[in-house]
Length: 303
Image (cartoon, rainbow, N blue to C red; front, side, top):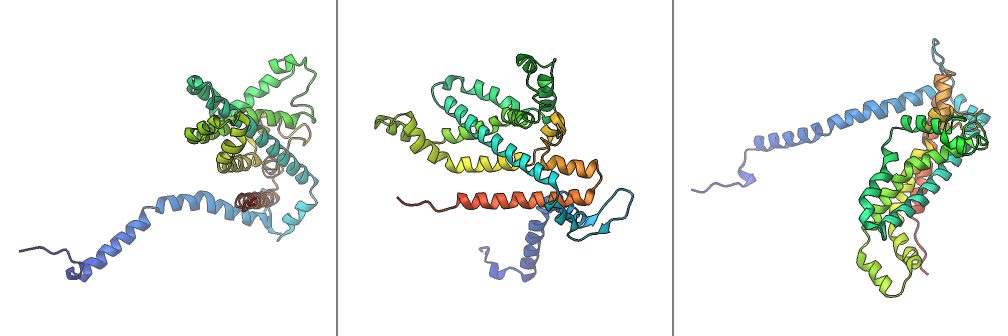
C-alpha cells in the first residue's frame, strides 16, 4: 500500500485552512515593524503637517491659517540666512570629508598595510564619540585663555566668537568627527577592487596617478555617490554641534535650519511656523535626493 501526497486528493478544507494560516503568518511577522514605523514616523509627520497649517501658541487653541505659515517663509530674512549657513556648512564639510577620507583610505591601501588595523581603529575613534562629548571637548579646546588651540594662536582668533570664523570652526569639528565615516567605507571599496587589475596596470607601465584616475576612481564612483549622499543628508540636518558650540551665534552667523526650527518652536513657542519650516526642510531634502539620484543615473556619453 502506498501513500500519496497529491494535493488533488487532499480535503478542500485543509487546503483553505493552510492558505489562511500562511496568509495570517505573512501579515503577523512584519506587523511589529509596521506599527513601530507608523507610531514613530508616519504619525509625527502627519502631526507636523497639521501643525504647519495652524497658528499654535502655548496655552491657546490652534487657529487655522492655511498657507500663511508657508507664505511667511519667503519674507523671513532669518530663514534665508539659516538656509545659506546650512548649504555652506554642508558643501564645505562633505567636500573636505570626501577628500581627506579618500586620502586616508589610499594611504592605508598602499604601503603601510601592516599598520592598517591599528590606524583604522585610531581613525574611527572620533566617529564613535557622542556629539555632546565632541561639542564639550572642542568648546574647551577653543575657549580663549583656556583651550590649548586658542593659546597656540595667542587668542588672536575668535574661533567661536568671530562671525567670520565661527561657521568654519563648525566645519572643522564636523570634518574631524565624520571623515572616518568616509574613510572606512572608501577603504572597503578599495579593498574590493581586484588586485590583479591594479597589478596588470602597474606592469603595463601605469603610474600611481594613472591607476587612480583610470581604475580606482571609476571603480569607486558608485560608492562615492552613496557616501556623499548620506553625509549630505546628515550634514544638512546639523543641530548638535551648533547647540553645543555656538547656539547659533555670534548673532545668527552659525544658525542652521535645524537650529532655527528649534529656536522658533521651543524658545519662541511659534510651533506652527516651526512646523512649516520643518515640512519645507523635508521637501527640500527630498528634492535634493531626487536630483542627486537622477544625476547619478544620467547616461554616460560614449566617446
